[in-house]
Amino acid sequence: MTTFPFPFSGTTLTALGTGALWWEDQSLLCISDLHLGKSERHARRGGGPLPPYETKDTLARLSDLIDDLCPKSVICLGDSFDDGAAAQNMTAEDCATLHHLVNHRPWIWITGNHDPQPLAFGGTYHHRYSQGPLTFCHIATSKGSGEISGHYHPKARIKNTTRPAFLVDEHRIILPAFGTYTGGLNCTNPILSTLMQPQALAILTGPRPLPVPMPR
Image 1 (cartoon, rainbow, N blue to C red):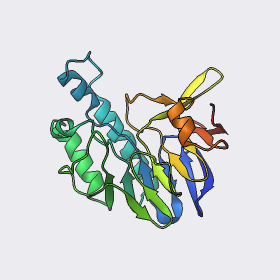
Image 2 (cartoon, rainbow, N blue to C red):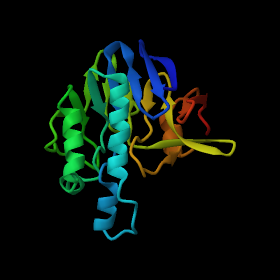
Image 3 (cartoon, rainbow, N blue to C red):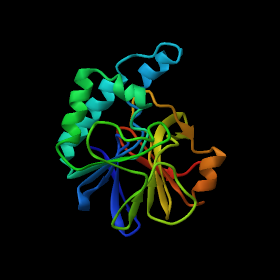
């Protein structure tokens, strides 16, 4: 598994090429923006057809990651479901896969703007969750330190390559989206340029995580 370890708020965290964050000392896996059921929601609202297997693909990649790392706990940073109806309309097979993942370890759901209410998949729900020096939430704030969030689906472009990317500075980390078929916001966008400090890194995901100064 390709990785990029880095210090953050008194801890050592590892950016994985998959777009997940690993806190080895706590055996904690953190992922963001699964957007399960995106294609179903898109079709339900009259959008053009999307390949219907994104939930199965996202869950398969997550299952493989959990099998590899055997985390003691998992945190999902919000927008885990594309909306409440998408969660209810998941296939029986996908529901069984998710129940199996959630019921075998402490599982923490952070509520997001797409899924603000608890859903019937086990685990515990929080708006913000703190462990040690770190605080996990869905949308980054401009205050405090040790904050880990998602929501923006950051991407970075280097030469002719655009990839989902972690954004990291002294105070905060913004994770890329883990879900299949999720879009992305270029890290040159003023929203992200304002949130992130001038010395921020972008860690591009992929076969080999690539840390570069955050493009602006």
